[in-house]
Image (cartoon, rainbow, N blue to C red; front, side, top):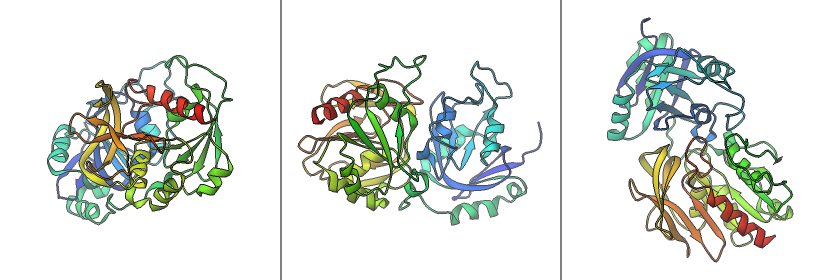
Length: 376
C-alpha cells in the first residue's frame, strides 16, 4: 500500500485522506452519496451529477470495468468520484477498459481507500455541502483544501442546465437492447414527441423509441413558438442538474405551453413543471440518490421501488394551480409525483427509466404514449 496522495476536504473542515486515481489536480463540487449497488458507469455519465462529487456507498467499485453500451450521455459529468475500494480486477464479457483509465481519459479525479461509511454518516447528519477533492501535492494541505471548498460555488441558486444541454436539436431513434429489456421493437413512426434537454439521459429516449414514438430533442432554451411550429403530439421535460428555481427561462417556456399538448416530466422536469404550475421547490438536506427508494402511488396504493437522483424537491402543500400529488416517497413523505388533469400534464421526481435501477415504473411511459396518441 502506497502513502496517501489524495484527500477530500469538506467546507466544515472534515478531511478524508486516500489514494488518488484518474487524473491529478483539484476539483470542487457538492459532496453527495449514491446507494446503488451497480451501474457506476451510468452514474458517472448522468448529466444530473454535473457540479457534484459522488460517493458510492457500495464498498467495491470497478469490478465490471467499462463498456461501450452503458453511458447515459456523451461524457462523464461528475466533478469527482469517491470510493471505499477500487477493484484491482476487472471481469465482464462486455468490458473494454478499467475505471481508473476511463476517469483519466475524461479528466476526472477519483479517490479510493477512504472511510465512505463515516463520510456518508457525516453527510446525513450535517447535510450535503461543498467539498474539494485533490490528487497530488495539494492533498497534503488540508486547511488550504477546506478553504477551497468553502470558496467554491453553492448548489442553491445555480443554473447548471446551460452547461449540459444540447447545442442543437437532434432526432433519436435507438431503442433498448433486447438482451436487457423486452422492448416492443415498434418502428419509430408514431406521434412526434419533443424533449426539452435539461440534461437528458439516453435511456429515457430509448423508452420512447421502444414504444414507437418519434423523438426530437431540443436545447433547453428553445422558445415555445419554435416547439409549436414542430407540431408535436407531446412534450417531455427531462432530468438535469442544479437548482430548478434558477432555470427561470425553462419555467416560463413550460408555463406558455401548458394546456397546449400533453406534458410529461422526470426529476428536474418534474420540478420545473411544478414551478410552472405555481408551486415551489426547496433544497433537501441530503437528497435521494440510489436505485432503492420506495415510492407510493396514491391512486393505486402500490409501492414502487424506484431510482432517484435529486437534491431538490417540490414543496409539499404548495399551490399547483389545480394539480394534485400522485406519488410520495415513503422514506420522508416528500412529493414524488404530480398530475394536472385539465392541463394534461404529469411528472415524477424519480427515474422510471432506471439505468441503473428497477423497472417498476415503466408504466409511466405507457401512460404518456396513451396521452400523445389521443392527441395525435
